[in-house]
Length: 322
Image (cartoon, rainbow, N blue to C red):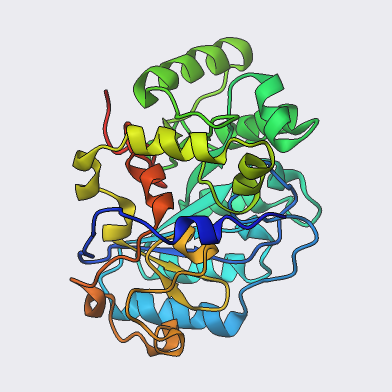
């Protein structure tokens, strides 16, 4: 697979300084029941990298020490980590808001039969991948049969109160199917709600539009198809300086499956550790308090244009509306 990392490091992207971190995003491993075309993690069924319980205990210890309000769990499929429920329960006991970035079909995997009930009992917010309300687009990205299984999974969650009870938030994620920017999040959310409610009677709270990043699997496809340069031109041409104030790296701390610290999940995938930091000194075991990182410089690259183009893009969707 073609590595786009060398193409992204020489950059003229504007500097960004860190603020106080209120969100801890933890990658629990690269094991997944899918191998999606747009995946910037290169996750899949053959990956073996999984966070250990020792590192998870270090995550819980950091949550006890700091001012982190939200624990954002990602992967791969984070639920496939054998210590997933242990971490969720421990964080909730500390009063931490927990987000599970769920691919929906994981609910039907062997051993996950009680997963939906567990998430509802713990009051976990679910951010679920459904890259389009059209079956053909979803299956182009994620594989045959995924669309119908995803709809069935949302029905399961709706029956438990997700998307209906204000305490059980269910948000969906849209990714473009190719090298284009997402449309207006607000208008696309209206389309999703109309189509999914009308066709299937299902409910959700918000839709988040996320720009595809030119790294790992998606980046390799761009290069192979001769579209990398034009996509990067698209991101640069649509750069909005206003988005610099609200990019997620200012208030988020990203942790990989081994416990090393990064400014964001994308830097993690590009192996770009915290700026001016020796890797061994920026492991979660050595971080006394997230506030120690305030005013540090965010490590940037050309991929950062993906977060600042158009409406902007973050793990919580668009940074602004048109």
